[in-house]
Length: 445
Image (tube, rainbow, N blue to C red):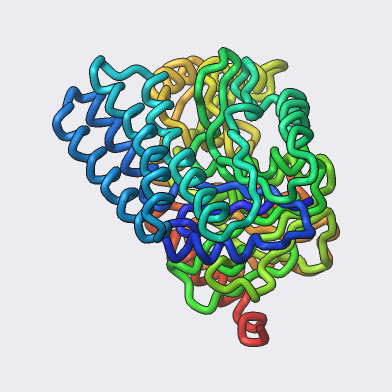
């Protein structure tokens, strides 16, 4: 069995859905197909929720009706038989009624999550209708809300997911095609929740782990994970193979094609993850597995929105328990630290969540002098750095010789060299690294 996940652009139009239906067609091979909402849907639903929070009922109603009309048009285009289209529209309208019903009272976080869940419910209902009623192929629509659940810590409940997914699959013995929703789930209280933005990748990996599949495929609109950011750098190329650890580092530090958590369940059971292009299905894409090559630096990613904090204290830094007490400040405010360096008299670190920054800074001033730099970017270089015999660090710093570096992290991971720079220098840094590290290889690809 395989899991195939398709993102919003892959199912963004009737024509794209037809393409996906052909890509998943393999009657003899069991498959679980995980779908995102159609492109633009989640953004529209976020807007609806924001308008409702602001009390803009008329605007929220209008926005929802625009989205509804879009789905009705897509249904009529995808499902040419009138009776099939009518039945599908009835299902779609049930999703939109759920949104309209929430407009009668002030919106709550529970209601917001219910609104956001409709996107995946809409796309899977429409796609399932097309596969079964138009193409005449047997397929089972598996409601993700029947098996995807978070625990009390708001993390996926792996044991629950595995048990309930296996139960669902067992009820349909002999079936080979299952269609389900990405992103959405229930929380520990049984209420509708989600895995946050990009969570459909995470859903696919969790489902693949729970079903012990042979491969997880993530289909997007780009040919695998590229060695650099193709939006700002020319001559990038797809990486053919990455290890789980390398892919996780790249995803966390800004590679948009992959959700940061999506490789973790797959890695636990050694399930390969393949990144493929819906628009160019013949391309090999990127294979993520337990294997890593000898190549020192394979790719670069950048993570924006960082805040750098330096705490200077010549009196306390080397005192027993100092670092523990400092880190406890961030733990109290549930604020993760991305990067850290230390010297004899100072600790520098970065965070990407500034929600509680004023409170954190107030407490840190009790340790010493505090300096803050906002609009920072981490540049992460990933590869096989277990044995530093490639001169990779030298190549990196030569390429960045004209870029002011705020922090450097090297040695904490066998797969990662990270530097912190001002966000204003990001594009220049990425292009310099591409020229210094990848130019020859790009010409050979």
